[in-house]
Amino acid sequence: MHNIKFAHYQLYVIDKSVEIMYDIREQEIKGGECLSKPLLGVIGAGHMGSALLTAILDAAVYSPGEVWVSCLDDVQLEPFAVMGCHVGKDNRAVLESAELIVLAVRPCDMSSVLKEAAPSSKGKCFLSLAAGVSIQAIGSVLPPGVPIMRAMPNTALIVGKGTTALAFPGGVPERYVNAAREIFESAGIMEVVEEGLMSVATSINGSGPGYFFRIASVMAGFAREQGMDYPTALRLAAGTMQGAAEVLLKGECSPEDLAKRVAVPGGTTQAAFLTMDRLGFDHALRHAMLDCAARADELGNSPVL
Image 1 (cartoon, rainbow, N blue to C red):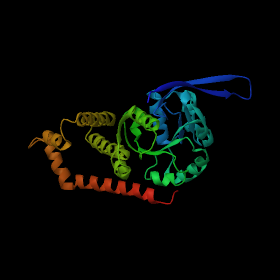
Image 2 (cartoon, helix red, strand yellow):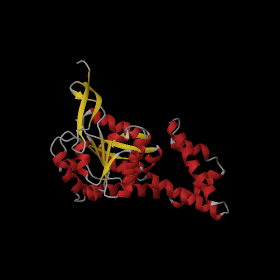
Image 3 (cartoon, one colour):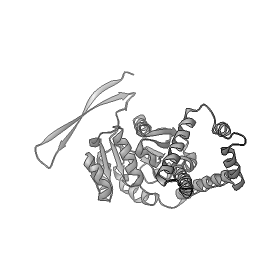
Image 4 (spheres, rainbow, N blue to C red):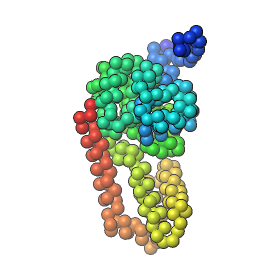
């Protein structure tokens, strides 16, 4: 089938006046499916919602005029209003105007948001950032056939270094999948995973920044105890984490091989590793991740929907 390009015209009447503006967006039809980028709506501008919005706008994935945001907190909305996004406290404005709806709300708030969204869900796709809430659970509240995706990003999105796990079932229209990929890839690393592994992803990249923050705190705190000023120690710790991550991402060696390379027999790193082994560092981290994933499962199984 040939690809067909056409211009889509939307007509707006502003404040019941005769002032009219035309929004001309070129769209592409491929095999009967519209592939143009869907207008974006974000419900919730808290910690994760704000990080995602900041990343999207900084990377110019969307212009402010293509983004609708709702949140009950004026303070959280203000920076996006200043940028030129459409903002307000009413979720209905987001639902009526946008096509790809990001649900950046807590699991305990998901039920009320979805019930409000259900009547306006035709022609929309929902992208949930809520930990533990399954696509099936979300779909049980929305009308049949509404496409749904799940993502587990992390707070490093705000500096363009986020890491996101994305899950979606077959049948989600390509334009929405492409938009989600572009959003998350513009702000870091994005990997598609099976939905059944989303709790595992939560224990890696979702909660992972917290692990590194805690490790950095211990490292810098130790250095301060030994006489180094804390800001210097913190920069050394953070820079070391950043450099080690870049080496890992090159993919030339496994983390196990890299650890062996730096742990020269009789050297300083080996001395540190021996103490970590004696105190059960690996065991503690594995069990921490196990409990993290279990908690994500608990959130998904709780009667929030």
